[in-house]
Length: 387
Image 1: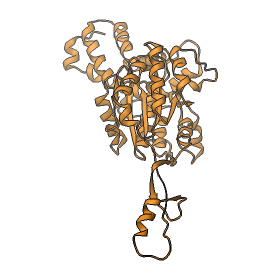
Image 2 (image 1 turned 180 degrees about the vertical axis):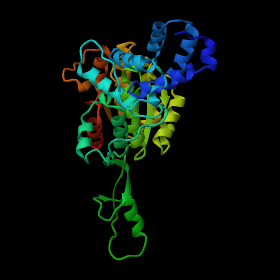
Image 3 (image 1 turned 135 degrees about the vertical axis):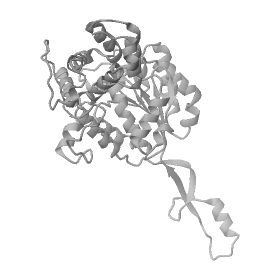
Image 4 (image 1 turned 30 degrees about the vertical axis):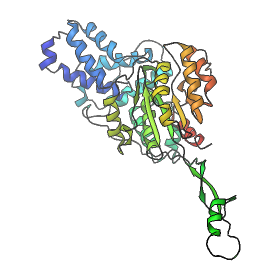
């Protein structure tokens, strides 16, 4: 396989790399536009003449986790035999791969099979195979409720996104320090009663009031580092659905902090997420939780946490910086919030223990520690927000 810079500039190699990236994304790998551009630049700069070098070049760009390797190898083996194979394939023709056939590998192969057997071109969306009308409406949705987002096929992910869009939050109004007139209220409004005495009337007119209630805002901090890629992308759909029902201040962080509140206001979720992609520069990279929380506490906390806000932090707690700094920033965030809820997808494992330094630093300051790895966990979170 001979590839040159000119072939990338004017030939079909660039288009083929884009189609290959769409196949990987449809199969469940977190491949965004930035990685596609990086892959094209890398292939253009490497200057190689072998299939192995080409494989290694794309592997370094598209694969960020060890369990994604087998899925990438299978897709590469089939796709680059004939880049136009999708026009003719009606089913998945996966090669036999030596090694342990674990349950996780089986799920990844199934996602690749779904992506490859959709028919038509990769740029066209696959037709929906199953209908989903809510979180608790059918046996199909019951199965999806308990399935991990990382184990879902592309069709199942689409159904999960539709279910999240239909999620409704219960009301969690809290009493404020302000009052409003209410004849049946239990608090005597002395000022209004004295004003009533200045007007002619029989008897002593007493006026009563009760406390005003309002729904507190919700502040969401979502980790978009490489280890959280699949869950953070699904949680963005949850953030968009919640933003349509109440006041939400949304932030994402990896190596930097980005406010995406305005981008999520758009009524169409696809358009909203496209706007988010345009402003966020650190997708699927490293993570500096302590640094990003410091930026939030310094620049945003007094603006968005001033009205008894509930704070949600979605992160696996795998910190790259100092655990002492993370501990201090989490403590400050907890004191500024009415309630601090930490969502960690690692809780899906029965044998989870808080052994990482970042997890140990964050856990003591969380009022509630929950998982966020499937539809059931998000449904439980929605109900818990009203407690």
